[in-house]
Amino acid sequence: MFEGLYSWSAVAPALVVLATALVVMMTDLFVEPGNRIVPWLTIAGLFAGLVVSISMWGTEEVAFSGAWKIGAFSIYFYCIFIVAAIITIFFSMSHEERRGRFPGEYWSLIPFSVVGMMVMASAADLITLIIGLETMSLCAYVMVGLNRGDKRSSEGALKYFLLGAFASAFLLYGTAFIYGSVITTRFAEITVFVSAHSNAIPFNLQVGAILLLVGLGFKVAAVPFHMWAPDAYQAAPTPVTGFMATAIKAAGFAAIVKIFGLMLATSALVLQDLIWWLALLSMIVGNFAAVMQMNLKRMLAYSSIAHVGYLLTAIVGSDPGVSLQGGTGVLFYLVSYALMTLGAFGVLIIIGGGEDRRETLVDMTGLASKSPGLALAMTIFMVSMSGIPPTIGFFGKFYVFGAAVQSGYTGLAVIGILTSVVGVFYYLRVVVNMYMKPAEKSFVPWRRSRISDITLGVLAAAVLYIGIFPQSLLDLARSAFKSLF
Amino acid sequence: MSHDLIVLGLLVLFSLALGALLLAIPRLLGARSSQKGLLDIFECGVPLRDGTQRRMQVRFYLIAIIFIVFDVEAVFLFPWAVLFRRLGMFGFIEMLFFIAVLALGLVYVWRKGGLEWD
Image (cartoon, rainbow over all chains, first blue to last red; front, side, top):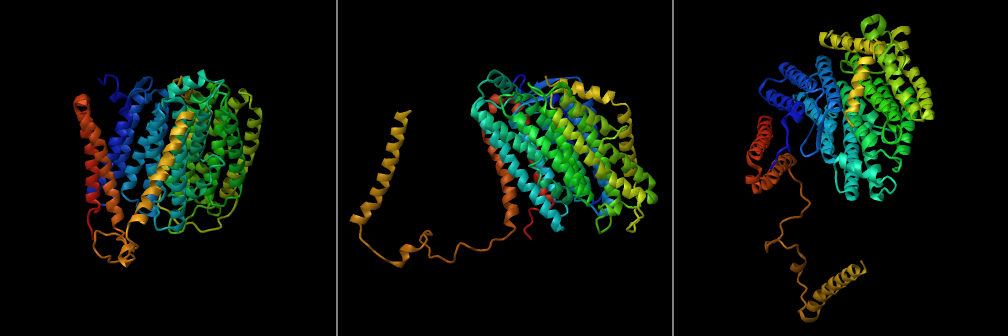
């Protein structure tokens, strides 16, 4: 009687990553602490998950009576999550050399949270989505609080946990309201309902949609729901911060594209105006607050808020739903943002070591003479983040703002470009500090770690390569977005 | 609609009246006594030893968390057991997998010393 209800192939990538997490967790129990086999095993498992995901590109399957849909869209996101996780583990290994060991659970928490993200990216049901989101968030709360001895870290982790739990309540409440008026939680059925009732949207559906927007706004740290982000980003160990800023944000946007881009896309709901305001405020607050930050992790936190604003610019889109160009732009931007952000945090991991945390602007002075390769990599990432060609960041902004202009939101695009000019100031200030100022602090000599050197090199090369030849990634993003229809 | 509201109102009135009646009857008919023991908290007839605001061992939190994890397992087992025949082989394997994952959790707790009291 359960024909077609379940399907192993539809969940195969997620199962591989889940098995990885379990195996890593068990292995950690039976080897002595600090054994390098644990992170390498995690990488091997994640890589297997990546291979399985890529091999399923082009297939499309709906399983678990419509609660789960795997297609090019979800596989595109799987690849973002898994690659970000692998890079995070590489950086964590060099972070360990400088700042002491992570507890053994850390290595299994990363694949566990990736499983949650994968569930989010292939959810076709609000309940499935929330379960994935909670799986991801629970792991993230623990990872942010890993520096247990440090008071500031505990404060940041607690803030993240409380506000995250609060946001989950908003999501659940919104889901309840939507269920109350549509009597289903399946995306497909809600889409049909919304388009059939677009001239008489029930009040409860309107309330539920706004609550969902608030909840997801919290998760991706869009202004005015951003208050937790700078503290949590600063509190977390730097590799975890990089992971949060890229993979978790991408998972949040997978949900936002599906829900606000397609499912609830109708001008009858007032969502469009609200997202417009979220985008505007995120760009302005994120960029101007980042100017004031001397701590680079806080600066990158505010800049990530600004990037959320840019991404939301493309979501605002046209009616009905986000345009093809907007959706493609978002997917492209998420990859570009992941590459350059992971790179920037990677540089911070190498520089910031020893007992005192070296993660302020002053610590960057004179880096170019001390370590020219590292300074060059950081320059590439900063230039890409400010959106200057020939880097991937330029094309990301180009597609996103282009989509906004095409949908008739020229004003928003103009504000986006003006605020990115503010962004150029604080990104290039890092470069100025590295190249044009003498070292104000003596460097703690660091042992070169080949793993992180290679990872940084690959990231910088990818930022430049896709910045010059963006077409193939753009095609992938387009076919991924098209698979949603 | 209005009919439902009348029924609801009657229910509220009836509840209030019943409560008042049950309080009034002993007051009118019962004997008054003012022994000190009447004000004590009822504890199975045993004299009170100390207050409820006691310090608890902080170790209990871990036991409580582990208990919840395995309690949730039982919650899933009951509906599965009821539908065991209809779920067939798929349900059986699925539940084996579920229990295996939880068993890994038990191994984890054990290895990490979560079951040691001292």
